[in-house]
Amino acid sequence: MTAISAPQRKAAGRAEGRRPRRSIALNLVAVVIGLAVWTLLASVGVQGMPGPAEVAARAGELIADGTLALDALASLRRVLLGFLLGTLLAVPVGFLMGWYATARGLLEPYVQFFRTIPPLAIIPLAIVLMGIGEVPKVFVIFLASFLSSVVATFQGVVDVDKTLINAARVLGASDRTIFLKVVVPASTPFILVGMRVGLGSAWGTLVAAELIAAQEGLGFRMQQAQLYYDLSTIFVGLIAIGVLGLLMDRLLLLAERRLTDWQERR
Amino acid sequence: MTTKISFRDVVKTYPMREGTFTALDHVSLDIADQEFVTVVGPSGCGKSTLMSMAAGLVEPSSGEVLVDGDPVSGPGPDRGVIFQQYALFPWLSVRKNVEFGLKLADIPGAERRRRAERAIELVGLSDFADALPKTLSGGMKQRCAIARAYAVNPKVLLMDEPFGALDALTRVQLQDQLLHTWSQEQRTVMFITHDVDEAVYLARRVIVMAARPGRVQQIIDVDLPYPRTEEIRLSPEFGRIRNEVWHSVYHQAPAA
Ligand SMILES: Nc1ncnc2c1ncn2[C@@H]1O[C@H](COP(=O)(O)OP(=O)(O)OP(=O)(O)O)[C@@H](O)[C@H]1O
Ligand SMILES: [Mg+2]
Image (cartoon, rainbow over all chains, first blue to last red; front, side):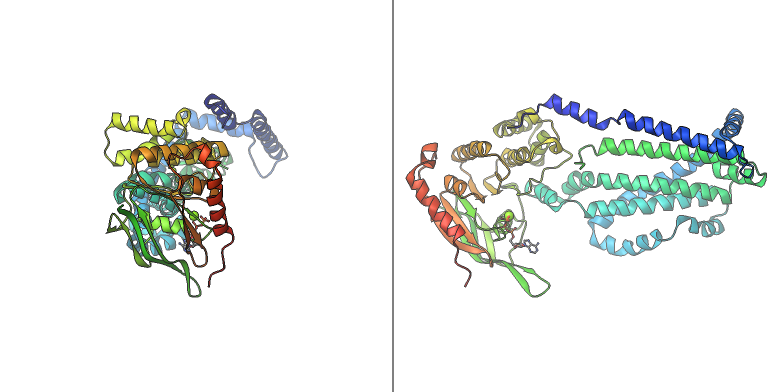
């Protein structure tokens, strides 16, 4: 029979999970090269472009006077609020659509239609209807995350392996039990992927929304800087947006790995 | 002897782009209470379909399937099923998979753990009780599925090629185990296999099916005593029955 013992298997699992040193080293090399190219471009004088040092200095100022933290917090608050509301609504709606043909028939045309409209295209409408306060921004983010999560959840429910449902049924499971103990766990990986996509599009939508109308936030700060040809501040804003977006994505990826560790990955 | 499972003039058709496909064509078969039958036949002859009807997962297009004299209206824990495709819940450990049916039957914690433990031990997976299915080999997954069905102690066991992915040694061990538990707990077993040896070794009757359309070709009685032993497996009489089944399966006259 199988010769491999339990501890051996665990060790193999750990080695597999760790990123090889080589690839981390290569990532660092890429960053250094990128900074060098940037410095070079700035020093040969590409149209008033600041170098890394200038941008770092500006970042120091913005951190010191608290502007960066305030802007980042304002942006994050909007994104998280819209994203949470969107996901909270998307998951039950997606389950309904996957489980009940009636719900699917009624809701799918709307979901598919609104999915083809970029959330940014809703902004003019949202501003006219809801003013220029927080509501239209949160709403657009809500819509972006709702649409991507709802489709993923619905697809996850539809794709649940029928044999697993049958296996539960022959063991005496009711529809309710099948839903809670089979459909929900089986579609979790899909939902988490949908959430990641949703968060990405929420973040992108937010910054654009702030470019148009806001009193604070990373997008607003960049828009202000643009008026004064303040390229350093724009760079700080861009980098902050990238770093925060990456951080949020990694956090969700971590959650996804944790929650769906049972999946066979090939 | 009373009849446990009865297929009466069962037809199963599937709609096709052109016309219909007949998966089962007027199959009639009675399986007695506490009988052990095996079903053999070429791939696609409707073995799994027939079994799914007894399980209550597939409805006949016409005819009826009775269990204990009542028409089957759906699946239930009185009929344990082992699927051809293992069908383990990948997010649950071996132990949790095995306990799944026991939880549904509201069996209290201590008793549940004891029964799961025993079923896991029976299939030789004790060292892997807390492992996730993804870390198991094909044969180990199959044994976990067997343990899950055994644990709820059903009156009828419907097994779809349950030993298909096992190595020869484990296969023989599990055959003997299955016969042993069957003789003690007196269940009715319907067991699908591709292996003619296995079919004869386990069964009191071998149902040979034919394809296109799926139907019962021949029913061969296995007049060998239980308990079956290695001695019986190697006896000339066993060889004779084995040849008969072999011929029935591999030299089928084409459908009229
Ligand atoms: N849902 C379905 N729709 C259409 N045809 C089907 C469906 N399910 C089964 N069939 C057909 O019915 C026939 C019998 O299928 P079944 O799975 O019962 O065969 P089997 O004897 O178990 O084969 P194997 O030994 O390969 O497992 C096959 O030809 C299959 O293509
Ligand atoms: Mg089959």
